[in-house]
Length: 371
Image 1 (tube, rainbow, N blue to C red):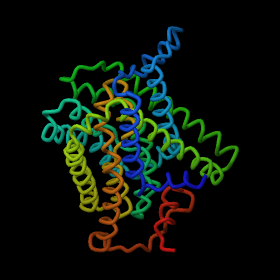
Image 2 (cartoon, one colour; image 1 turned 120 degrees about the vertical axis):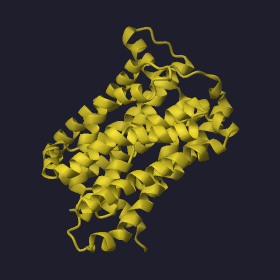
Image 3 (tube, rainbow, N blue to C red; image 1 turned 135 degrees about the horizontal axis):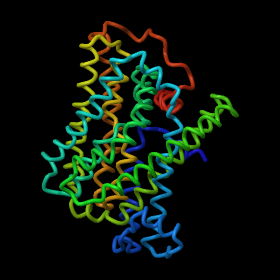
Image 4 (cartoon, rainbow, N blue to C red; image 1 turned 90 degrees about the horizontal axis):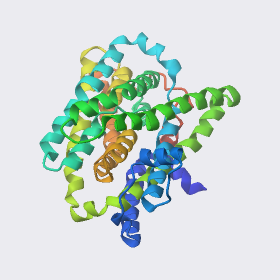
C-alpha cells in the first residue's frame, strides 16, 4: 500500500510518533487499559518457556511489547556492516574521538542534564538517562548522507557503536542509575534480547541476503524490513501510552520539560564533535560523520530497557527522543552544509556516496525535491 511508503519519510516520524501517542491514550481510556499493570516482557517469555503462561491482559500486552520491540531493533541491525570494522582503523583519530565521547563523555552529559531538569521526577529522570547512554546505530547514516558526509566512515562507526553498547549498557545503567531500585541483570537480559539477538539475526540476514539477492536487491528488501521497524515502534508506543499516557494528559508540560534537555544534548554533542573535527584537521566529510555518530541516540534500545527493566512511565520519557531528534538532526544537517565553505574551505564538489548505500536518505531526498 502506498501509504506505508510514507513511513520511510523521516520528516514525518515526529508526526507518526505523536499520532501513536494520542491513539494510545484514547485506546487506554476507551478500554480501561490504563487500569492494568504490564507484566515485565521477559517474565512473560520465561512463563511461556516454563509452561506456566496465562493469557491475562497484562501477559498479552507484554508479549505485544516483545514483538513490537523486536520489530524495532531487528531491521536496523541489517544495516550494520561488520566488514566495515577494519576500515575504521584507516581513520584512527576519528574512531578514537567518537568512541571516547560516546562512551566516556556523553552518557555523563545526559546524566547531568537529567539532574538539572528532572531531579524532582524520578521516572522521567530515569528515562532521560537511559536515552543518553546508547549511541545511535541507524538514522545517523541517513543524516550523514544528507549532509554529504563520509557514509563509509559512518557505517564503520555504527558497527563499533552496536558492539560496544551491547557490552557497556548494563554497566552504565548501574553506574548512572545506582540510586534507582532496579535489577541490573534484567537490564543485561534486555540488552541480550533486544540488541544482541537482533544483531546476530541482522548479521545473518545481511550475509545470506546479499549472497542470494545481490547488494541492490537486498537493499530493496531491507526497505520492507525498515517499514516493519517503524510499525513496531508505533505499535509499542500505542501500548505504552495506552498503559500510562494519562500521566502525560495530567501534566502536558512534562513533554516540554523533557524536550529541553534532549534538545540541548543534541546541540552540544553535534557542535562539539563537528568543531573538534575541524580543529583536528579532519575533512568536512569525516567531521560530519563523527558529529552525527556522537549526537544520535538509540532510542529503540532505550525504550526496550525502560519498559522491560523499569516501567512504562519511565519509557514515556524515552519516547520524547524521536519527537525531537528528527527535526533537530535535519537542522544540524543544514548547519553543517551552511558552514562547510567557511570552515573547511571546500564545496560540494566531492564525490557523492554511491547510489544504494543509503536508500532511506535517497528516498527522503527525492521527497524533498520540488515537483
